[in-house]
Every structure is written in structure tokens, then in C-alpha cells.
Image (cartoon, rainbow, N blue to C red):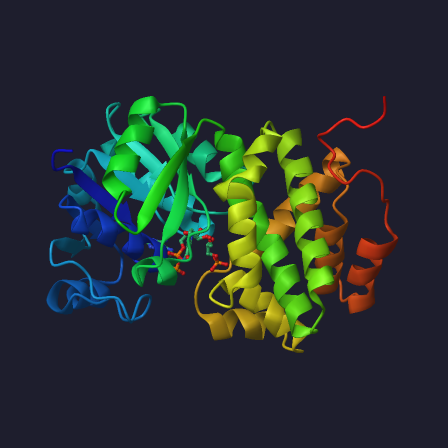
Length: 339
Ligand SMILES: NC(=O)c1ccc[n+]([C@@H]2O[C@H](COP(=O)([O-])OP(=O)(O)OC[C@H]3O[C@@H](n4cnc5c(N)ncnc54)[C@H](O)[C@@H]3O)[C@@H](O)[C@H]2O)c1
Ligand SMILES: O=P(O)(O)OC[C@H](O)CO
């Protein structure tokens, strides 16, 4: 592939990990971030010490504060900004986008202002409709450490899918494709709720039977919700679905898992979030999803139990109770059993 001009918006751990792979692949990569000291640090020392302290960055990765220049110079733009600020940043770049530019979200969450996904924000605000979503079991610190990793690019545009695969493929990173944007994006956002549940369960030292049941019923809840909003249930069998659920629900590197673990160890939600110091998308996602689930009559006992525990002061028994005493029928809902 010939050298491409790319920019990554966001100076956090995932944006840095993606920018670094593309710089290593020989592309011209700029990474936009708002913090001037961070820009200086990356450009002078090749390190993003706050977010990826152990990962030396490629010398061709150029950090910048100049958003306009970064966008104008790039054919492909990755938006790696937490969901809380995603819309604000996209509104700032809106006038700089042109129809040929490729625009990809790596953010796993919902707009806290209204029920919509990041791809909806991109579609609504931009001059280009060449939009994609990158999602999968992608713990940034593992990627930066060279752990073998797979991801998924979802888009209607074959050209965008092919470009992203070419930009990111490396000896340690593989990208598969999917056209089910809703499924891939919802899977990445929803699993954060269940990573909190699993971190909490681990802190309580539950057995592997229990962990397996929680994760499998999480997949059932996630896909039930996602299918209602247009996703293909089969997507949940892939890297963006089951793959990401496994990584996030079992790894102490996951911020959402760590929030759950802290809650299970007796900390308050605010203390847990402050101690982590990075974004844990699952808390906002839980709020948004719980509201939509009740509006649409979607049965999500784990999410409901967690919501009551975190936001309504319910006891832990409530979460266990909603899981163990709620409706129980089909194991796999999207398969037909009764003949
Ligand atoms: N870290 C991972 O392992 C990982 C993996 C896959 C996807 N993601 C997703 O990527 C998104 C970003 O996560 P992250 O891990 O990079 O976050 P992070 O907490 O490491 O960093 C967030 C970055 O966004 C910047 N930011 C926040 N608001 C901003 C604003 N208004 N303007 C400019 N910059 C702003 C912060 O300064 C920081 O540099 C999240 O939705 C996350 O779910 C993360
Ligand atoms: O650290 P988390 O919990 O935001 O998870 C990071 C990624 O989404 C894992 O794929």
C-alpha cells in the first residue's frame, strides 16, 4: 500500500496505540490532542507517559495541537475521543471534512446527551458518508506491548474497510471486516456494562461456573438489545461480540472491569472512577441502556440489577436475585427450538 496521510483524534491510550501501529507501517500519521505538554512529550521523547508509559512510540508519529491542519492533511481520520466529548470534537471538524475523506470511530459508548451511537454522530455531522467503526478485544496496553490482537472494521464502504485493514495490519495486529455497523458498535459499547458486573463478581471470589454463566447470559442480553436496534445476532459470535466480552470481562487491564472490582471490594463508584483516572464508558452506557431497555420492554436482568446496585443503593443480593430468579427459558434465543 502506498503511504497514506492519517490522523488520529485523541491523546489517550487507544488513539496512541492505533497511531503508533500506522506510523510503524510507514504512513504519515498525526495525532491530535488538546494537551500541549503531552504533544511536546511525544514529539521530544517518543513517549505518552500518562496513557502508555511502557510503549516507545515510532519517531514518525507526530503529535499536534493543530486540529485544522491535522484534518486538512489527512485522507483518513480515526476518532478516539471518549463518548462524553465525541460530539463536541466532531462538531469542531465538521466544516473541514470533504466527501472523499474516510472517518472511523474507535469509541465504545453512547452519546450521553441522547440515545445515539458514535456512528450516528458522524453521519449526522459530516460531509463524508464514508464512515466506519473499529471494535474488538483491543486492550490498548496489550496492543502497545505487541500482544497478538484481532479487531473488526465495520462499514458499508468496501474501500474504507480495505483501507483500514491495510493501514493497521501488522505482524501483531489483524483486522477482519463486517458490514453490520450496528452490531459491531453496539457489541463494543454494551460489553462494558458486563465487564463491570464481572469485575464485581471476581472481587466476590465467585467460581468459574458463575463467571461462565454471567458472561454467557451477558451475551444473551447484549444481543437481545442490539437485535432490537437492527443488529445481526451472528455478529455477537465474532471478535467484536464474544471476543471483546471475554477480554474485557476477564482482564484487570480493563477500566470497566476495574470499576466493578472496586465496587465489589467496597469502594464507592466515585472513588473507583477517580482512582482509575481514565475513561470507563460502561457507567454512562448502563444509564443509557437501562432507560432504552425499559422504554422498549427489553428484558435485561443483569443490567437492571447493576443499575439498581450502582444508582439506587440496592444491595448486592438484588443483582444476584435478578440473575437467579428472573425469567429463564431459552439458552440461545435466536435459534428456534419448538417444532
Ligand atoms: N484503551 C483501550 O484499551 C480501548 C480499546 C478500544 C477502544 N477504546 C475506546 O476508545 C475511546 C477512547 O479511549 P481511550 O482508552 O483512548 O481513553 P483515555 O481515557 O485513555 O484517553 C482519553 C483521551 O481523550 C482526550 N479527550 C477527552 N475529552 C476531550 C476533548 N473534549 N477534546 C479533546 N480531547 C479529549 C483526553 O485528553 C485523553 O487524551 C473510548 O471510548 C474507549 O472505550 C479504548
Ligand atoms: O479498558 P476498557 O474497559 O475501556 O476496555 C478497553 C477495550 O474496550 C477492550 O476491548
